Image (cartoon, rainbow, N blue to C red; front, side, top):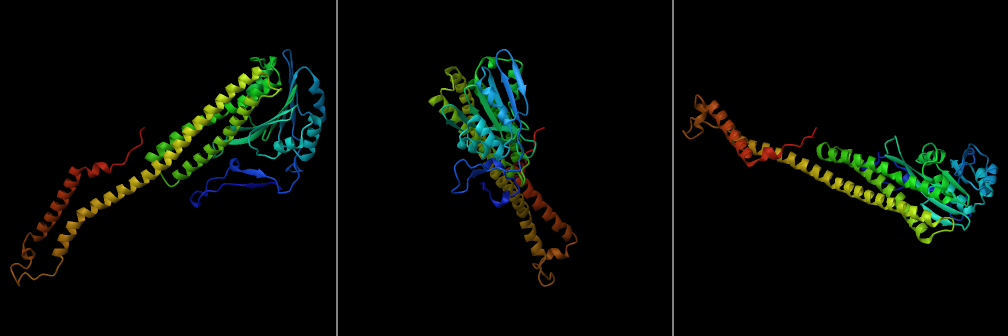
Length: 386
């Protein structure tokens, strides 16, 4: 049975929702290679086909697995897209029709897998990760997309087909934008992979705004939940880094080792895709450093707030210490009749007013002294700029 493990944080951050992004899967020790860990109750996922050449485009929806075979031997490019993981019977049929190795089926179905390249001579298997904006508490969601590249066809499998970043490629094919209709399956694979890699940039824009908001919150309005937000941002950036780092390595391997299914012209385009992956990694590393710095700033802000509180208490204590001393002296039991030096102020007509005058004078003098030293100006808390 498929098992999962997660990285857990300290108890103070238990409220943060755990993400499947940090899961990894492994098979039960001793299981046969190619074992598919998938529910038998799942329904058959839809198979959509875009078959095109420079002259025309044909669209087919909800194809049966056995109906895919005739398109392998045409002079057009056939893009089969499977929306979902389906059940084991479905994948056995797909494996038979597309002549897929059992280990290929295992990599496609047993998600998540690390992005990688596998060359099976007549087929090239590419495992990638696609990120999409998320409407929930997390900034994004991550899903696996698998490519099986053949001579005249490309099979793609999406883990969650409800939303993807591949629609611009479909539109380019339908309306003949660019050169995609004049290219082969290798160029289609590049275009899809490039769209997946470029899909990281909108997520990074969201992170840029989120980090700016965290900076303002840390400096001007930090609270007990601020540290949890910083920690969650660091975990999400780590998940992004893991996803794009492995894709960069896969792109580098494909460019370096090459494949008979990838033309030299497409290799040039893949180099540009590789550059985008490197750029994304640089941005992610910058954001990770910023979030790490936010942790230090938060701890410094907490320490500064504590220092301001202690300074205020020190000022109050310093003012009341001499007042307490004077009040303590006059609170003692004296008998003015026993000696003229035995607290004669007790018999003065203005003795009570004199006592308050001394107290007010001492307090005013100390407040003025602290003001001249600049203590009160240093205790002013920063205000958020409007």
